[in-house]
Length: 129
Figure 1 (tube, rainbow, N blue to C red):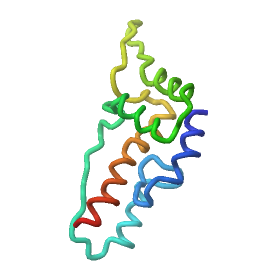
Figure 2 (figure 1 turned 120 degrees about the horizontal axis):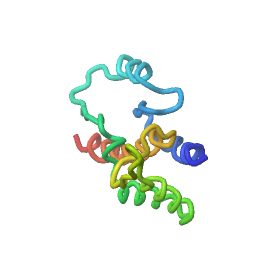
Figure 3 (figure 1 turned 30 degrees about the vertical axis):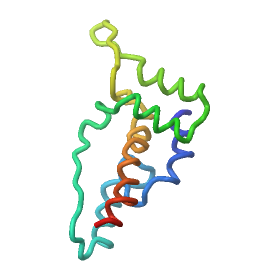
Figure 4 (figure 1 turned 90 degrees about the vertical axis):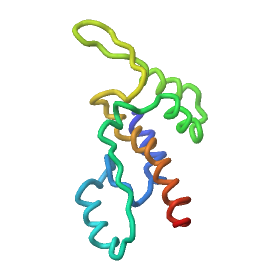
């Protein structure tokens, strides 16, 4: 339910240039976009987000969500989900960063997190350079 709510609210605000972990988007749509629109490109930005799920900062994530979501109960639910911890060899371990491994909400949370970078690139870097 959390994923459905976040997707319904945030998905329409995401950049058209964003293809990762999105409904009806992925590697093939990104490549099609490159072929069709990137003719004559002078520069591009490449980023390694291989450990995005593992290194997601909880306080930054909650601050980003808090900018648009004003329901403290919902934000508390997300915070509790992020900090719930995990079991390994029957031992509970605290979760200090990252999103739930294998959780259906992890992709939308990372897209919300990375959306800030997309906004910065589209609103600051591209006009400036």
